[in-house]
Length: 364
Image 1 (cartoon, rainbow, N blue to C red):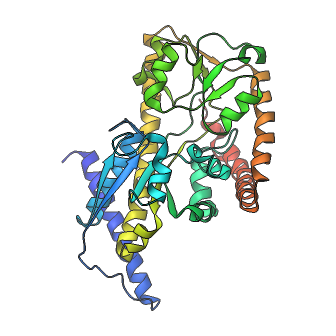
Image 2: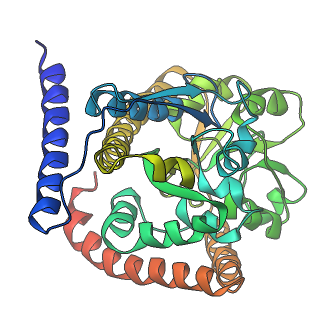
Image 3: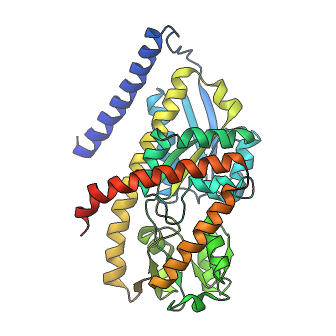
C-alpha cells in the first residue's frame, strides 16, 4: 500500500473514531448515544462549478466520498455540476427551496440575497486561510454564518479553500489608477465593488464563460483563482499581464449549504459525519490548491512570455482605502452584518499579531 493511501485511510479511521468518541461523550452527559437506525439517504448536491472541475468541483466530490465512507454507505450524495440541474448562480435558491438537499458554491455569489454573506468567502486585505479557519471554527465565525443563513432555511459549512489568489489577467499594463478607467473586469464580491469605485466596471459571470468573454473583448480583464486554474483555463494564451497580489481574496472559502429540513432529518451520528466530511474536504482541498498553484506558477514563469507583475503601490493603497469604506458600509446594512464584521476584524487584529511573529521568518 502506498504511503499516501495508508495516510488517507488512517485519517478516515481517525475521523470515524472522533465521531464515536463524540457519541460516547454525549452518552456520558446523559443525552443518550447517537442512534444508528440503518436508514439510508440519497441526496442531491448542486454546485456552481463545471462537472468535475479541478479543486472547486473536487471539493464537492471529496466531501461526498468522505460522507459515503464515514457513514458506511448510509449517506449517498450525487454531485451535479453547474447547469446539470440548476444554473451555477442559482445554487442558493435551489437548496433553500428544497429542490436539492445540498449545494456547493461560494458565499459572495449571494450578495444580492444578503450583503453580509460576502464576509464568509473573503474580505479584501483580510485574513489568510489559516486565520480564517481559526475564526470560523473557534472564533465564533461559523455560528454567525449559521445565524445569517438561518433566514434562508440553510445550514452552512466551510468545505474547501483555494487559499490566497492572484490579482487577475489584464490585456494591457496597469501603471496607475487611470489605467483602470472604463475597463470591464470580471471580479465578484467586494473586490468587484472596489474596482467599480476605482473607475472600472465589475462583471459577474460563471467560470465557464470567462475565457470566451475575455477572448472576444466582452471583458478587458478577469480574475479567476490562481496559477493552476488560470493555466488550465488558458488565460496565458490570450492575455499578457498577470498581476499580484490577490488583494481582494487573501483566502477563498468554499461553502457547503444544506437545506434545514434535510439536515433535521438526519440522525445525530450522520450529522457528525457531515461535519467531519466537510472538515476533511476543507483541509485536503486547501493543501491541493497550494501544491498545484506552486507547481503552475513555475510553469507560467518558465513556459510562457506572460508578464507576472505586482500592482503599483499607489493602486494597492487606493484599493485598501476603498475596501474599508465598502466593508464599513456593508456592516451598516443591519445589526447582524455589524456583528459579523466586528467579530472578523477583532480576530484579524489578534491573529495578525501572532502571524507576524510566528511566520515572518519563513518568508523566502
